[in-house]
Image (tube, rainbow over all chains, first blue to last red; front, side, top):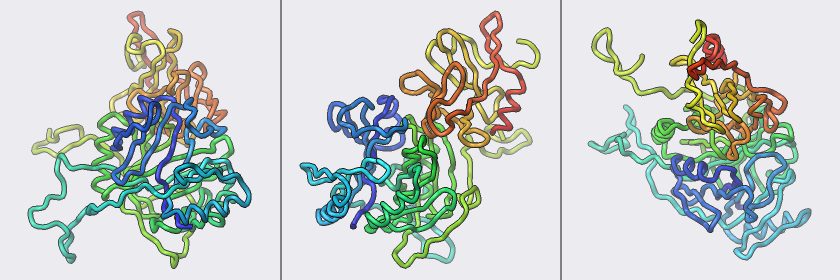
Length: 316
Length: 125
């Protein structure tokens, strides 16, 4: 199953204008789809689709109040769609749409759509660093940071779901759709990557009671840790609420910074995630603060030490 | 304002149907949320009971209510709380409650909270 990863996540929201402002300030580009729908896209075209929660164009809501309505996955080609359709048609209704995409529900009732991916190839440098002993990555006179440096989400990275039945979800995604478990946080759940993506994870499950079923967060790849910090700092300064971070995860090695959102899920900036192939052997660690991160920092106002005993340009 | 009280705001700072967050003391790690519902003000710690210690609930400064304005919402995982009681009626902390903060209104309309709320904010941070 040549699945690449999430192209879009679709939400039915109760505060459309607030959500539009939030997604724009997060760094996504608004594209109006029709009278009631907006796509907010990253640089490679992946992103988030929002509609008012009463919009009949939306798939049915979950039984919980979670606003996630559909996960749209991108695959390599039509042959991949045909293979998924053949597999899924064994035990459930699969709808083939006019554009060739297919829709069905997973074993817990999450709405899924698979399509030939819409993502555009990106050609941009990663964050460049200089260090003694290694060739300089930035040329002489090439600056590492500037006040106006861009820090925009490049691609939709991964989705995290609250799931009431872990075994069903793992067997569905691994046995039926060809996802691979890269690591496991015992007590929370497994990290999964699809066959046509070498990112450490595009999907993570957290075991919860049924009344919590839904999306916990979605994450966006940035160009590096500096872009992540710059984007997060600008976001905080606009009045948005940090939830966790900045920091760096252990499993996946990705930098992270999570924010609350009017979509009732967390939005995460991530950067510099590990890549894996099929020779990788999954690790396992008990879920908790130690396993969750290498380090954890917290945003504060800019400050600088000054000259005298009264020094400093802000509070210490 | 009586001794042992910390002033948060004036009653007119919180129009009907809105909510705002105030730090009880500069540098305190947790806001106190003040909500105006039907002319009556309610105070709660800005600490969702989903995780121990509580986590901040707004998605943007003062954005504590759901889209319809019917409930206090935690914009971490979408929990909804009754404005009058602080009881979670939907979401991860179903059955738990926000920590209520008693509000005192002075004759001039000043709204204040007991000074120990700042200490509580420090512990919950």
